[in-house]
Image (cartoon, rainbow, N blue to C red):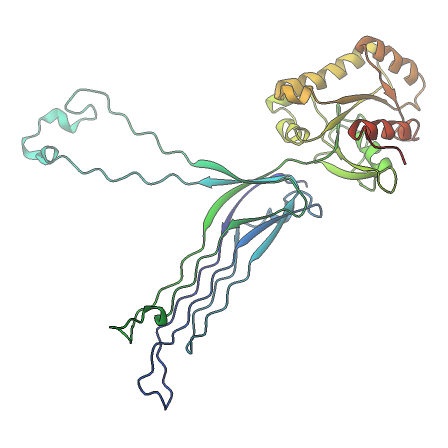
Length: 376
């Protein structure tokens, strides 16, 4: 199952303690301080990777912690630094820090309020002595801070830093105190509650009503293997495929769950779907023309456009190619032409099953994405 949201706690490693120690060699009976420093704690580092699809690999993980640094040793030997914890997340992951609100400062009571013996009886009611209604204070809300937008493959971000190791007693020696018995403990690493949210990054997003043939097209033009069946909502999560036109011509296509009326309000897969459309550069709007009157096909088209507009006007204004699918069904050609007349725009007819018109469509997509690039 594709997982595109997850909450997790991350902790940097704790720094090792500094050591209080003195030299004890036979030739130095009054040896000086030689306590080593503690090692630094490891960091938690997120790396954006195309090898990771969704957050399913983290679904059962509720805490990620880097390694602690080790304590300092004698003979001025420092402790070992803790190892960093590297966590791969999908390209397109947004990392939010859910920062707990600061505790309110304690309020010093007014001395007059402590004179309980002489307080009037109404002071002990909820209304209080003033007669005003008693109101509970509003609970403080957590602050949500965006830490990173992992929008580039290989991008590395330190999410939680490890704590510094403590100083050994050698750092505290002075002219007047040559045998210090003081050292520092290691500092704890950063701890953060995170909310991870994946917004897929693809050049082309396939949109349309359920069972419009999006998965079939993606499977034909790339090595992606989306689930395909003749019933709605077969695609419950996005699938990504790389379409290779030639040695240097390629683009990324995403098969996204089918939209239904009311999706912008959260109905069906709703916001889960629309979130992933936001980052695509071009929309391939697929319509099943195997059956139905042209007016019904236009209604199917308008449902998708309306949901995109309701969620975000910027989505509805993205470049879009309207594709009539299932050209291998008798009468599809006539229905596609009639739909184009009603829409007042070109409608490209293809068959995801037989491959009719698919090559021409892919080159049309490529030239919209890269208008300055030649075909070969």
